[in-house]
Image 1 (cartoon, rainbow, N blue to C red):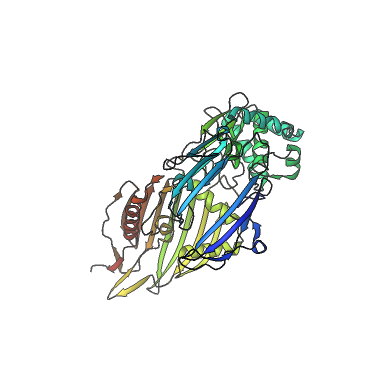
Image 2 (tube, rainbow, N blue to C red):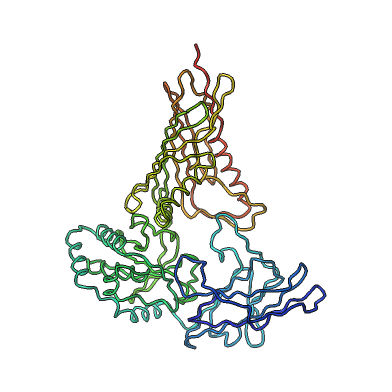
Length: 538
């Protein structure tokens, strides 16, 4: 990958050799091609250079030399982040920095130390860990060997001051927006109400067009144009919200974050950031991300819990840690009524209510796909033996409210007769979606849960006449990954099953993954235990 507005990339040589070291093939520049970088949902000018390699066989080696030329001012060295691992096995990875190494700062993973070489420095790693995708991985540089290099002459306060000076001509609010903000200043009695009013106004009245914050895309649109267009990227949303808050009588600052990488505070560079939000100091303040159209604003911005934000303040530029998610940050509630038809099929009426983080991610997905795809998505959740008869989605375009899905479906062959008894399982499709752990053989990387999760389900089974449920009490489960409990209640003509589980957020080592999988599988096994309906005693 490369940014054509900031750098040039050159293929110097490509050679393939056999096991004896003899040349088999060389690269041909006429076969190389460039495509848009589609790896992110955020629009950017970035490209990807594709280099076909011919003549490969097992045991052969590839020698590829490429050069990057960065454009820009000589006094502003770009921030470089290099991951030394690859998705394929490599014998050795070397990063060589040539030139005046005293003019740069650098940092590296604990296992890599820089070494001096005539004309520069180099970082060398033999047989680095091969990157492979595994479920619940944290960000790559959290566990892969990485080197960071930045300009030594820069300081955070200077970067912030220069940036704010460069966008000052963009900040003028139109008269209509100033009047709106002033009216909220009078009608709202405290800072929390003002923040909520501004957040909701920008969130619901302006469309988000994602353009990555970067070296060639740092300057927001003039507010007069943003208000006229009624759309903008993260910079436009943040600047508008900040100026409305100031007009409403609050202190508010722009803040920079990175949604995909760690911030190295010891290496000042605006290149480290890819997103802009707003910071309001004080007990009633916090962080505001109006580009999030999927949840009620005012809490922890989606996907940014625990991240460091650079607050752009000419008087006191500083880093502020965004809080972690609270215990109740993500909740799912399921309420089902189940009837048995033909002594085999389960007719289910189900209401699913999503709150917080789980609500935001699901609403964002459903709002951006056609109605037919929404139905296919729900059918996929219910499983291959399900027939979806009804789907109603409530509050899809109301981010201040929980997302509600009302389902009517039939599960084929969910029960069967054994003698005079009926044996089957209660529906648990949504519990399986949230609790199932993907098996990984010899896991190599750590895993993490970005947010806590609380799931509660209540299932009422209408028991056929003349039968009753045999319910064996199940022990609660509690360990370092989760705590859950089950209980059942027998009533005349019905049986009610209740399940609750809480899984904390946090990071765990790769060696703990088998224990986590075993814990989740035990929980699901208890949920899917056979339910026996026996004849009533005479």
